[in-house]
Length: 161
Image (cartoon, rainbow, N blue to C red):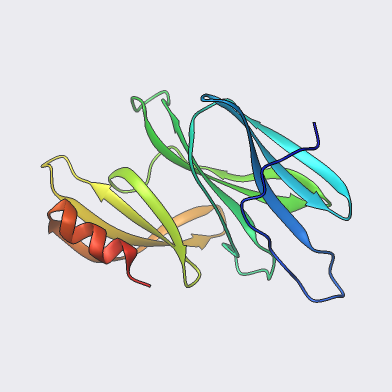
């Protein structure tokens, strides 16, 4: 129950306890997001396929959040990739944002320089690479890094540091 596959470590100054977000996969469509801090482990059930887990200080408070990419349908959108963001609230994993959609059709995301960078397709079959920033309740569009391009071109923009 406490054995979680460690994907990365998030370190803090000695005044703040270190925290570790990790993912425990039970099967293809059931995982647990784990937060370990001070020897205690908190878990959040993710009953969906998970395609990415990253950490970063999304809201600028100095503490990293977990960004989790899941595959699920929503009431208004068919099966697709979604982005969920979780935070540490007194040693417990708690949802911060459970996004149903960004601007286009989400293919992948990365956390780069304090922003969420997305690789998205459009309804005309082309690609965009966009950046989003935290805005109190959720992610807001900041800018396109590239738009109306082919997938290979989009991947180059998406993977730039």
